[in-house]
Image 1: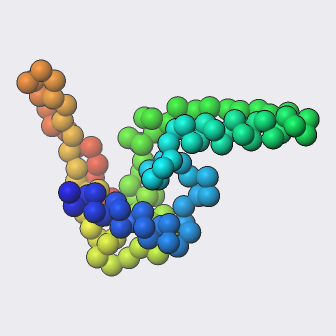
Image 2: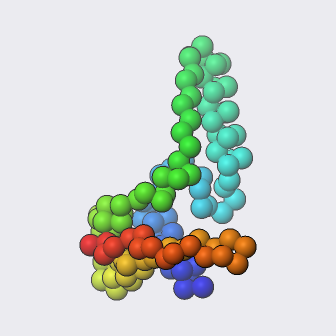
Length: 118
């Protein structure tokens, strides 16, 4: 519950200060994979209309978010103007986290996934 409220406030801050990429589709209301696909398709058709060649490269980044360096993420948030209590809360949230896998009532050993972020 707290995470959702924090995410909504952070998103509002980034949107209000025009810090989100113009073509951002993820995590936006009324935007989806379909929205992004339609935008790409439209760009391809517009390029074809003026006889331009289109090249598209696709990369699966689904596992990349498990590899985000939290110190880099926090530095980026600082560069966006986050500071004080908000930054401390996010830093605390990212620090000293552990992870565990549960499957069919069996649990893996708990392992430290992330150390102190800053």
